[in-house]
Image (cartoon, rainbow, N blue to C red; front, side, top):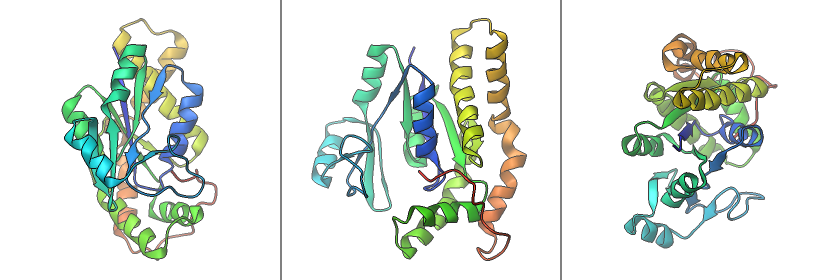
Length: 239
């Protein structure tokens, strides 16, 4: 049975980097490339990062029921085509979705057994540093993304797992553990010693076990941007 993995995060949290790393080290994963009405950025290519389509074409796909989920974010439309799930099921692979909180809610409603993972930055200052480092947005857009992130992270309790993306290597290993642990649990196979290690690592990322660690992060988004220390220069790259 195909497992659907949902990964969500505020813009700049490093989600795309984590997803790309995961796809290189975990076999049997199909990845859904989202459709969007926004223009390509930098070196982005159609069919690689996104399928870039006119709004009229996107709206036609909505009318035809071609999306598993879709939402409007920052004035642009994004959607996951239903065909990716069908292809994953046909090929006997699991499906990895890189989507926002609106899309995640839609998927969970349609596929309650989907595994949802919320990626958080270590704090607000780190998120701002990452957004500025990628140098793709104007100041007003950066401030809007930060304000939006404050609201998005309040949705963390709707997710099965919480992953704080502080150090890239550790975060990739934690994400890998979650994916492999879910596969193992659903297979009902007796875990080997190494597989038990994945189960333990995944369990530490369960929502119930991450509540205390999340609180300081939430607090950092509620304090003044000028309070606190310097940003972390060694943090993982943005999504």
